[in-house]
Structure formats: C-alpha cells, structure tokens
Image 1 (cartoon, rainbow, N blue to C red):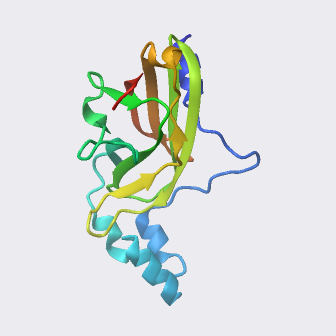
Image 2: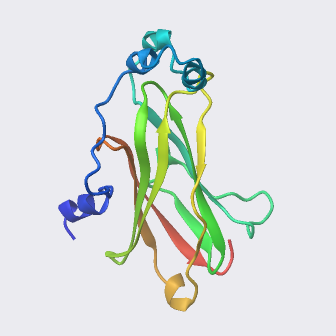
Image 3: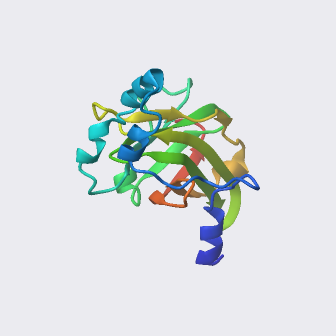
Length: 195
C-alpha cells in the first residue's frame, strides 16, 4: 500500500455540509460576549481571559503525553503505557478476549483548539484491520497547566490462535477540524494469552 493510501486512512471524517468556523485567538474569544457574566466565568475556567495573548505561543499547540490501555483484567500495578515520544522501539502486549479501553493524556499549551480527534489505523500483514476515530473535543489551555485526560469507548480484543499470530502495526494521529496535525506516530502490539 502506498504512502498516499496511508495518509488517506488517517484523514478525519467530516459531516457533509459542516464547515469549521475561522480560527480565533484566545484574545478574540475573550472579547466575544464580554458583557455576559456567566459566559465570562466559563471562558475564564478554560484559561480564556483578556490577558491571554501574554502567553508564550512558541512551540506546539498540543502535546500528547501518553496513550495507555486500561482494563479491569490487568494485573495489579501493570498499566501498558504507549509513550508517544519513544514509540518506534516499543511493543505492547494485549490479552486476547478482554475488554479494554484506550486513554489519552494531552496538554493544550496555548491557543484554542477545536474539533480535535484521535485517529488510529490498525494493520496486520499490510492489510487494514480496523480504523478508530474518537472525538476529543475543543479545549483551551488549563489555567494551571494541567493535562486533559480522555477515555475512549471500551472495545474487546480479538481471540484465537490466528489473532495471536503476528504483530499488529498501528498508526495514530491527533488532528483538528482545520486539518492541523498535532501528533503523528506509529506503534505495534501483539495479542497473547496473558498480559
């Protein structure tokens, strides 16, 4: 499969007729409906204030910190974490036939991000097995710099001897409504009888 096909797999889906609004700075959002007191409190809780342009706007808008797998069947103290910064060499083992969910932790460094989603394409032996697309939402920077945590819908891992043979290669992307890519990485997993 060509690189162009891989890029098509990682494109987000859009609702027909939906058109994202023009991007605005945090300062512009702070000035919108400034006379509405409850809206001003809500915007302040997102870190959108009149002094928002004094933030350092260098560097990425979003930093992905971790991608991890959660399952009630995990042994105590074990949590498979897929470190976005060093994925090339890491491989994760998932127990076959169990329910698990993916959790992503990320920080919004500056600006307002809208319509952010996580896209994951799983291939085995070069053939696409699954495409998952999860909406993360729209965010502003946390006033105290805390990261956001998003748990995805639970899913069940495949089971059986055929599912356990081979490695599953995954391409992941975090992208927004405007098509701006915040993170792009590859990792792999294997299915096994035990975690």
